[in-house]
Amino acid sequence: MPMKNRKFSNLLVTGGAGFIGSNFIRHLFEKTDFGGRVVNYDALTYAGNPHSLDDVAARFGDRYVLVHADIRDRDAIRKAMRDFSIDAICHFAAESHVDRSIVSPGDFVETNIVGTFNLLQAAREAGDAFSRFHHVSTDEVFGSLGPDGFFSETTPYSPHSPYSASKASSDHLVRAFHDTYGLDTTISNCSNNYGPYQFPEKLIPLMILNAREGKPLPVYGAGLNVRDWLHVEDHCAAIWTVMTQAESGSTYCVGGRSELTNIDVVKRICALVDRFCGPLPGGAPRESLITHVADRLGHDLRYAIDCSKLERDFGWRQTHTADSGFEETVKWYLENTAWVDSVRSGEYRRWIETQYGNR
Ligand code: NAD
Ligand code: TYD
Image 1 (cartoon, rainbow, N blue to C red):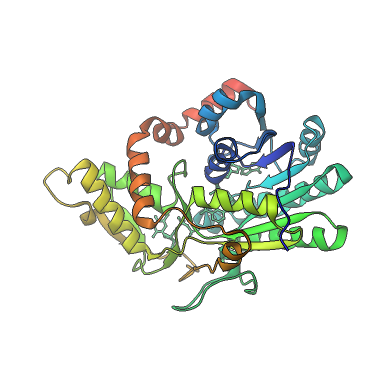
Image 2 (image 1 turned 30 degrees about the horizontal axis):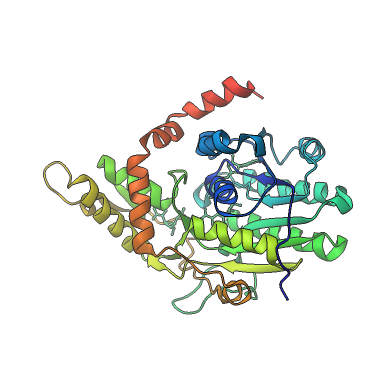
């Protein structure tokens, strides 16, 4: 049976300056009874933006620390674990974009596989003081579905892209450390997230910003691939539920019960941007910007999650639908132009250099 309400004092969140990690840290401080300290361990790659947590740093600065360091650096991990008496890890840090993994697969092996291994070793070395390692993973490890069926916790692994293969490897390492060394671990495999603070290389923020600016909307192939869209806040609630309540060694699938084809997603975004910004100059609707481009190599056709185990064990439910979530997300990107400009301009990189030098 699931255990109840595990407590942590000093939680290392890797990749906390990225999309889901920053939402998770905000969720911890604002929506849970977590009373400890968060150490955000992040290399601040192109996808990591410390400004995404300016509000958290201002309000909870006594319980929030940013450590600018890399999970490929074993000594830096050990130092952070010691310096902050870390008793739990929630591991988000990863190279996360499938298209980049097709071009530069080596970075994915180094960060996603070797980096996860380094963290597991450090957790093991921490001994009895260490309480739990939660690994945030993806449904892409299961491969691709046909028109029917769902991924669940018992679906065999069958990754296709370098990204999903690297995440599958890291999942296997986490299970191996549980089974071999008795490390206390949990894993969640979730579907495609959307919401605020997502780097605008992923489908939804890219389409919102291009639509706003009247730029082409590049849809891969016919646009008939299906993804199961999960609002990031619902995902964060699921992660905290699993971290604090699930049995060691368990895995949970997290999905949005919100399957849409890519072309449907893009058309919904166009309609929302038209509604908030008016049509394009000349009066054309933004759908006219849709441009079908060459398909992604090895493009998985359909992902869909059966999350009934999470619902059954803990009563977790999605609180957002695609209708409400997309509308709120489009508004967020249209209103938060300073954040958008900073992640696209490289300004935040200069901020990093001011703060930390060129380490
Ligand atoms: P992201 O790309 O927005 O953020 C990744 C973060 O990790 C960044 O802050 C980056 O600076 C940091 N990072 C990268 N390499 C690092 C390294 N070597 N050392 C330390 N920090 C490093 O990613 P995201 O979308 O927030 O995804 C977070 C996690 O969730 C990933 O593990 C990803 O595989 C998983 N996931 C994401 C989705 C999704 O839809 N975004 C879906 C399923 C699973
Ligand atoms: P993405 O956001 O990259 O997530 P993932 O590949 O992890 O599912 O892509 C979501 C879907 O949208 C995927 O089927 C690829 C497609 N896509 C496009 O059609 N055009 C784009 O410009 C991007 C970035 C993605």
